[in-house]
Length: 454
Image (tube, rainbow, N blue to C red; front, top):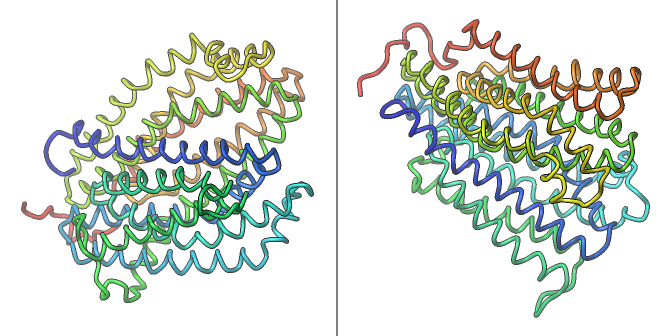
């Protein structure tokens, strides 16, 4: 990322991230497809379980982002010993956190499900599914370390390959273990959870092997696992705001769903279709955001400040070019997009209105994601937390209530709340970015600021 064409480098790093994200969506769809064959109560299990696991995972992802920032900056600065040490401290920190989260949640799994008011007819299956998934949390966190470290050095192909292997493995094991095909036992809902847990175990083993063998250009040793308080504190300082922003956003969307549900099943269905399409549209923005974070981190570490600014500009141009046709298609053909999923006149009409109102703000939010990558790459993650939480808690949720319920706009008020919250946060993100306070590297003292020779 510190030399050569930035546009080319950004796309090289971004496309595997995009494909990995789509593979994960495919994994979730396959799980839902096979579990749906068992009945509606079986589908409750992964839905509730992922809401529980995501609260812990969001904090771990924040720590991973903190590690990615430090790895990229140390690499850019040519401080390879500290770069490797960061990887070791991430592994130590997240594996310990993974076992703690897994153990505590496993012991209180039944109480957690009761607290979430799990339907009685789905309680038993959900409890079994949750316990198996919780056993796989340490493996999930281990792979997250591998993914974060390699993203920091600019290698996103390695994680993509492992994701492809594990998604394919899960797709094969799901029907075998759920329905007991051939020599495999018929395990029902537990079979899907065991397949997921086993796939995560394989991902963790492959990731650890590559890290400790150095086969992907990053070599960990036992020495790197010795606790280093200063690096752990840096990872936590960068990661906590990221994690809190993600977990707070998740809770905000959960509350928002309650408001959406109050308008009836047709609105809920249209909202569900709309948000899924918007998530797919945002995949390029997510990939370029992470690629930009790596570029910003490595070039800040190297001391190439002009190249940092150039990276952000190139990433913004790329996401603009990509999102123009996508959001235009959403705006023009929203009715047809909705009809693909369901042939219900009310849902189709709500879907058309949703896409017409929100599409321009989806375009704007793509730039917000790229700017958030700049904040993440520099290690100044408080703006990411503030922007994420403000979008939901200060803007969208109150505006949805006021416009849709108080002023009686109904679903139209919900769509306009989505538009305004995205648009306002886009303006706020550009203002915060323009101040330039994010440009200081988190690994340098004044004496380190001169860039090293190539």
